Length: 202
Image (cartoon, rainbow, N blue to C red):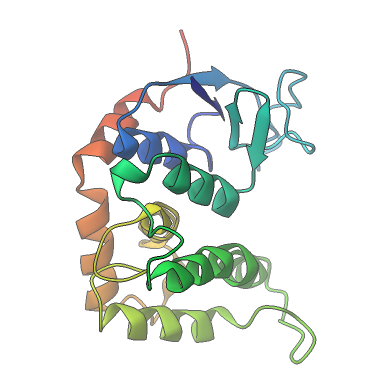
């Protein structure tokens, strides 16, 4: 059985949602993590090399990093329809948008949050405003981030943007198509089920 190494109300929460979308049996292994407010600690039972979450355990396989887990689960459970198969013409777009999340989205918004200018011409990411121009242009042409069908990538993107909606991180970029996109994704029944499970044990 798939095991998600999980800390409630963290980045692993989105993967409870993704596993609910898949609809196959899974279990949660609760661990403590270091939190931004200084609370928490490293957990010796967490196989992540830096004590972070999410981590997926599938037999002897250990998968970490959000984009890798999303791709692994989409490929592992093709009947769930959460990612194009290898021979699908949409596969390239799906892979690109997963890599873009890890390689561009997260660094861009981390830079903005920390007020660290992006080193132009030398970094693998761009300013967050440039990112959001790309995202909004994409969402003006299609219903979901990888195309016209909900995929595992939407768990990453819509989950993140849902958190940012009331934040200055999206100031000036919170378009109607972005708000509609987030609403479409977070209203899915699987996310509601995941929210009920995203609680500390006990």
